[in-house]
Image 1 (cartoon, helix red, strand yellow):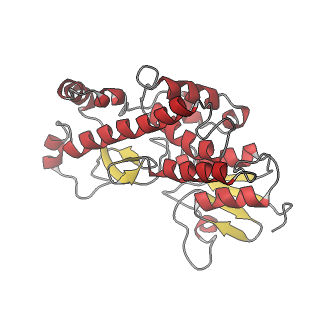
Image 2: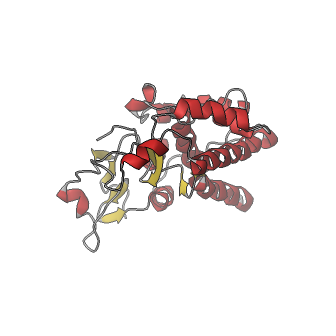
Length: 275
């Protein structure tokens, strides 16, 4: 496919996967057109991008007649097809392997059985037909599965903290900004927007977050909703799940979670309330 063919990105603002692809496009200096997609009411154009199957989720990248629904595949396609900044090293097989490994590992950072690209949503009679009065009583207590998920997430993020600490950074796979950062940073940024405060327990991740957030290419596509506090702070006390004595932190988290969103494990990370 010629580089001169039109590139169109169908995306949802605040979607982790969408932000990933946007950063690739900006880093490589590719000219592209964006079309915002309402996943609740997608247009016929969006649903019919692929003639053999209905497109159901964002982002979707279209380059000429080629349509890519898997955003990680789209990232690699853009790297291989276009010039500009190299995001996957091709002069050292060890460095290339490390970048690719962390690129894909970042997408498995998860809460429960889903990736962090999932989102938290309120149970509502209109949205969930299985939700009933008995669920209202359960919402008053911390979900044990949610507790375990937060603990797993806190420990998983510490692995990435150790990458930066032991390898010296400043980026997630070495001294150069790479596809590993393109994949990992939106995940971290989403968790931060959801209340995670890495400064104390994750100092290297904190420095990393601030540095990458201020990159010109990242600022160019930064979700507008992420400039204001998230309505819920589900990950506000996340670092406390690292402590050996977990009873007190969990009690604290419980007191702050009443009436808040409950994990549904569906969808892709996107700004809450975004229609």
